[in-house]
Length: 496
Ligand code: NAD
Image 1 (tube, rainbow, N blue to C red):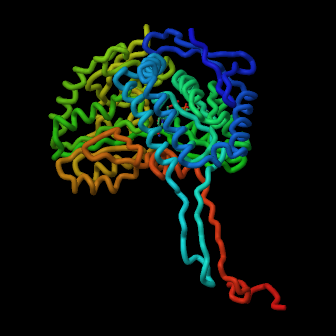
Image 2 (image 1 turned 90 degrees about the horizontal axis):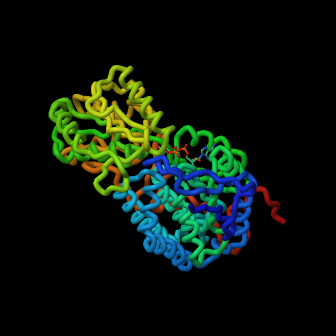
Image 3 (image 1 turned 135 degrees about the vertical axis):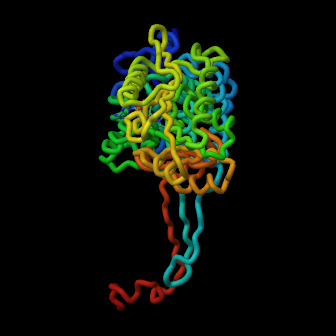
């Protein structure tokens, strides 16, 4: 059985106390690998490695084109090893093989994008800032420094590269800490990175408990920036722990996004879209369309078609290409989701379909749809993070907007309509980071992604995402040569 080691300063090493934890396949409960469990001492060693690499300028001082070439090497390595990475992602995360294949492909594609962005000169020249006249002004984009990158378990490899990519493109040196539930492909990524020309210490990858090594990374004064994706609850803890040296933080947290179907929507497409929005990766997606808002005029027909469509979904072995719904990540998550199903019933919502599960061998929950839901219910307000959809009826566009915005979250959401203008008016009023019109889950490397309200702080992707890993510096070169013409000449300086 493979034993994965920590990757610190370009070396693979055991944790300082030799401890490991198990990587468990959620499809059958089997242990698939042993993973080194880093200690606080290891986390500090990883921070020192990144700090030394950053301060030496080996990466931040490297020509942009060279940095770009090396990031592209990592992307190529992912492509070359796509088959193996896909298999491991399925076994480690319970992702269906179709989703995992797409994730690996998109991980390489994103890194390719970030490699191109690494070559872009983000510095700007601004004119006319001097009160007295002539000056040159340069607004430099400089790397933020050492970045701690902390990721969740739902899209393991993709999340890792979505953090490493922009940080490296900006010139930062990093420590990646993947979720304990799904560390395997991040460990594989360490092996691939080790085969590239990336200088040692620029990327460090350590595995272990968030409450221990995550806390250390977030509070360590040698870390300048934290890029986090995970729950809103942990996001709030991170915000507090990062305050010690006022670290820059980006938080990508939870969601409870509204998927709005208007009465003029294409019925078949919006039913398919509702299934995809809610049940992709067993509903374990932060931006998932977990609150389905359906116009009363089409409600009965829509619900009937939705039920029929879901009855065709196949739940089971994620390695089988025909499987639509694999297992949820672990027993803990299984219990959480089943508990929400119980809460929904107690709150008086009705079950349209599903509501059952088994944890005998793997953790499987049938796609579940609640009807007769009102937006005040816990199942409509809280993030369940499993294959559970709640359906709410509305009577006009204003009511749809009001219900959609009545949430502590604001991450994603969609409007399905045959009328772009009408859909656009709704999209503009939604307090959320992404709105799709007649689409769902589509994230682009070039468009910012992130949350309003308690869904997060900051944005990933695009230039905005890279800028999150930079500091801006203004350099003013004054060209007023006569001191009596300086703008401050008549202020406090004695004229003798
Ligand atoms: P989580 O918050 O439990 O853990 C996320 C990461 O934080 C893990 O690596 C964990 O080890 C680490 N961590 C835990 N406690 C920590 C601490 N005190 N200090 C530092 N690090 C700590 O989240 P999860 O259960 O892995 O993932 C599911 C959650 O992630 C959901 O809420 C989901 O909505 C959210 N998510 C958000 C996005 C987004 O882009 N907004 C994307 C995916 C998942």
